[in-house]
Image 1 (cartoon, rainbow, N blue to C red):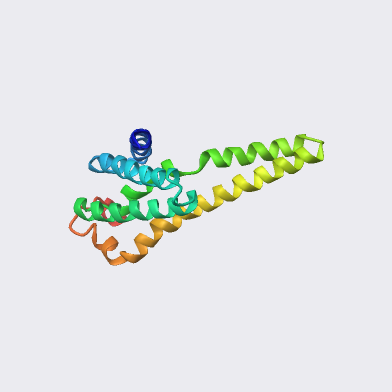
Image 2 (cartoon, rainbow, N blue to C red):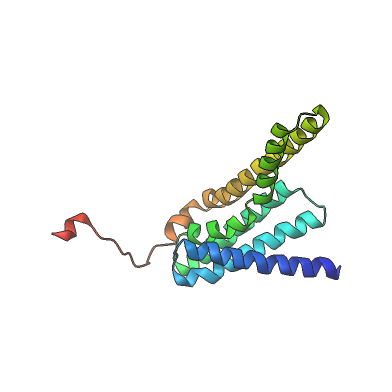
Length: 174
């Protein structure tokens, strides 16, 4: 039991670092950086625990984790008066299924290079398996956070009410 807790803690730390990096690259307000890292850690470790305890597959676990990130992002966005997307989307990026996409492309290349029918069948199955996981996890990320934004649509629009607006209008230039 302690091994899974340690693995979850390490997963949360690495996800937080990745979430912080993705958030920093998109130049959000400074006050949102560490919240994005926190959401990335919470969401990724939640998905990690669901998949490691064999409760759910990676696609359903990703859907639930992205929904959790969306709900928490909405709550923090209202408090900080920023759009929820600024906090939630960079927190989702550590859950993008890069290893499965890499494995599917690698299997496709190996499929095209082999001449033996048994090996071609093996690599074709590997390609389809990894490509379907990549597709389903990517869809789960988008759907999970979108459900949150659609459910709390009014709150999403009102979360930036009262915030200072920095706009340069074309009429003001003259």
